[in-house]
Image (cartoon, rainbow, N blue to C red; front, side, top):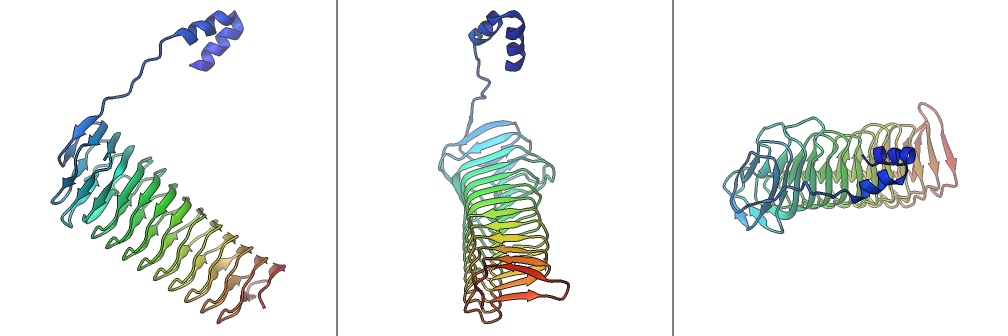
Amino acid sequence: MLDIFLRAARLSGMPALGLFLLMPITSARAAATAVNACQTLSAPGNYVVTSNLTASGDCFTLTVSNIAIDMQGHKIVGNGSGAAITDGGHSIRYIIVANGKISNFAKGIDLSSDSGQTADLILNVDASGNTGNGINIRGRDNSLTSVIANNNGGNGIVQGECCDSIFNVETNGNAGDGINLSDEDYLKNVTSNGNGGKGVIGSSDSFVTLSIANQNGGNGIELQSSDNFVVLSIANNNGANGIALGDFNGVTDSKAGKNSADGINFQGKFGLATSVVTNNNSGDGVFLTCAGNAVRVSAKGNSGTNLHEDLTDGICTNVRNKAP
């Protein structure tokens, strides 16, 4: 609309733009609906929770798209079954859940029925201490920001489709994996420590930066397929590899030490390890399947080989490594 008026102003002078600037601006914001009990939400709109809630089974069941729930700092506590907020099997999208704590459900938040472009947002939510997964979300183009999912009986977060943004998220002490991803995801400032399974597990085309995955039962960070990159991250004291990657992957400016297997394991070809430190692992410091590249690798005190290059299918290139 602005572009139309600007073109009109250029053609006929400033009065057209002046009239536009004098036009009254009206708000289309819908009023929020207060809710103080568990219920089915069957109309699009904005809802605010006005008190702490307890539930036997599901609390809020959402049957339509375009719903925002602001918990306003309140708690929703279950009896070990159901979900605090669920799509109930309905294919819905454009959901917002914000500002509250959820505990003791089978799944804290379950938005797993729609596999399309859901564009859901979970913001400032603590989904900890549930009997199953903390958060189960499907679809694509979702955003999880300032989320905590600790000490759940299943996984912290499960994301079933691609292209999610996961920022400032904490998933510690879960019985399963900390974060279980699909592909084409962007993780920044994620902490995933002390989980029974893997800290972070995903597939392809993902970017992990400024993240920590320590003391997990399995691999700290595992990206199983191709075209992933791990940057400025730490994976120490894990029960398997610190960082495990497939083909065409890279790790830079990261540390992986004291893991029960390799510090960094490139399970496929064409890996790139740049400016990494991998000390005192029970396996190799860096295991690189050639062809691949090792640049400024610092590795010492590993029980296997500090820099292990598998030459079966080619050679690796090396620049300024300190891996005797």
